[in-house]
Length: 224
Image (cartoon, rainbow, N blue to C red; front, side, top):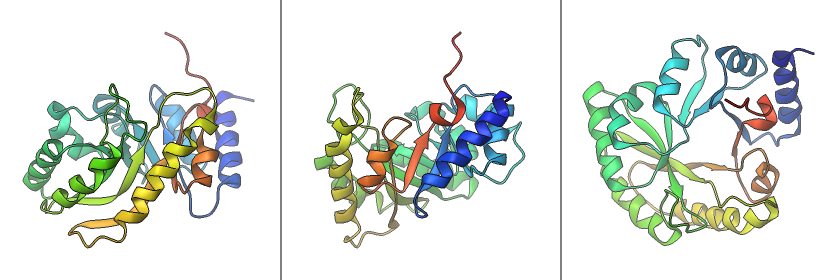
């Protein structure tokens, strides 16, 4: 079986196991245009990228109606490009980044959908908002006319046993449920993006409705 047919098979197998309310996002970092096209052919409608430059190159090669998500840390110097490339930023984690996004979106007349990234493991080296800071940031985001908060995203720490991430996912879901009760402008808590190839089953059990999968769909990344 060719690599591209294997990708299609992998995706269809995963899609057949997901609950109907869970969206499958293909984390396409380092993948070729042919691989991404195979993923779309198999039913992928959300493509996630960690880097603005890579997504920009890929968008020029993909002619398909899919949603493009930023799933890596967004550098402030890349915001101007990002608002022209992505349909959603899943990693908003500061009021300063929000202000830049809002300003650039206003310039080109668009409104950006965002998820607030929660640093659920409270790791110093990781981006994201600490659990205690999420509500404060959400309330401040309500003043931006060109940003729409659609939910939360979390990564969780790197662990060998996915079960160890369950408390992080559960905490993020609890915050998500609380935020849904708030009356904040431009806030519509719909999406909870949690879980990757090794942890998505646990994430779904804890309430995720977007899972970001790469290796399990495309296979291991080739080494330089």
